[in-house]
Amino acid sequence: MEEPSNSTKSVSTQRPPKTNTTKTGGNRIALLLLACLSAGFVGGWFGNSARPETSLQSSNQAQREVISSEGQLISSIAKDVGESVVSIDVQSQSAGQDFFGYSRSVEQQSAGTGFIISSDGVVVTNRHVIPRGTTGISVTLSDGTKLDNVEVIGRTLDSDSLDVAFLKITDKKGKTLKPAVLGDSSKVEVGNRVIAIGNALGQFQNTVTSGIISGYGRDIVAGGVYGGDQESLTNLFQTDAAINEGNSGGPLVNTNSEVIGINTAVAAGQAQNIGFAIPINDIKGLITSVLEKGKLEKPYMGVRYVSLTDDLAYELNLETKRGAYLAPAGQTGQPTVLPDSPAAKAGLKEKDIITKVGNTNIDEKTSLNSALSKSKVGDTVTLTVLRDGKQQTIKVTLAAQSQE
Image 1 (cartoon, rainbow, N blue to C red):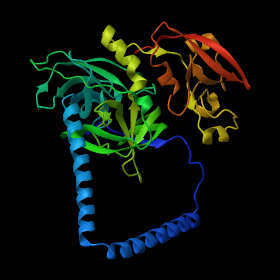
Image 2: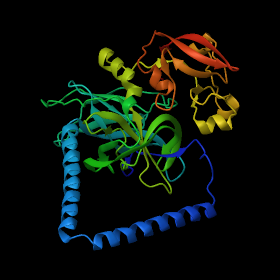
Image 3: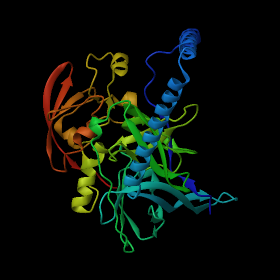
Image 4: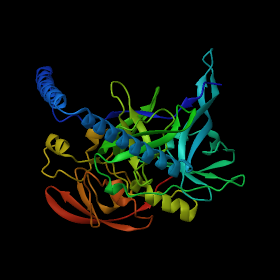
């Protein structure tokens, strides 16, 4: 048996930076900052030297009160949400080779995190936490109770940009399960305080870290910590709240104790404290289908796209700076409009830019996935599309995505 592994993904971003800062320019900025800091320090020293000691004591006391207040807030949030967070242990089989090069089945163990979304035991986590070949799953509640009878309701396709899976606890052992409260991820702003809760390193249950939202609308390519298959994920939150190995699938929470994201990946290499989370609004449609029908039924349109930004629009020489761009197959290496898909039947083409789904704009906060998340299988959606600089509307009837 191999050593247990954790399910956190490492990532590399798809988009190049806007400009490359030279060392000289960087040194100039550093020198300027140093000068500013020095001036601030000197001014602060002279100012403080003239103040009475009681003023300093008052300032220190105020700082302690702020720190204490923030600590109490984080502690309160951790208690509110912690009961809904579960540790997930997975046993799976994968193909391997023995010492002599013969193929054999290898048993693996891995760990991740999830959170409860219904009192009858439905849990949401990441797809990569529940790999293909899974043979057994157990979850551990916040009070340490281990529940072994756990089934997989469904998981998105490995090629899907939503890294999501749903589980069902079939034997609660008399435990009352507390569902997490879901927030509105469209209201999240850069700089908002967030808390990440998860099974860090696959060993430490309900570890809590805090930080802020550093950005949104991030597109990344993610792979296992030790290599393996890669997957393209879109429209993610970027956060500096530490997301460690084993945290995958856990909740990213706002200061109202509401889940606004699913912790999914961390940036490896030279990056420090850069994590990524799926906005909760992007999977609310899937949550509805699971809770109402007891199965994962994902609406399927059948296009591959990139979310436009100022930088990307400039690189592609596009006047439109927001929307879902159906990049040509030559740029992505994969077909843009999948054959026999609803998109193909509706007439969508390479280089189309989808700017709206119904009355919802596709922009830096709302991806195409997010805009479609409230739709159901069988719904007909109206797309506003730019083609060769001309606007038109195209109706697409969504089908159910294959779960193969």
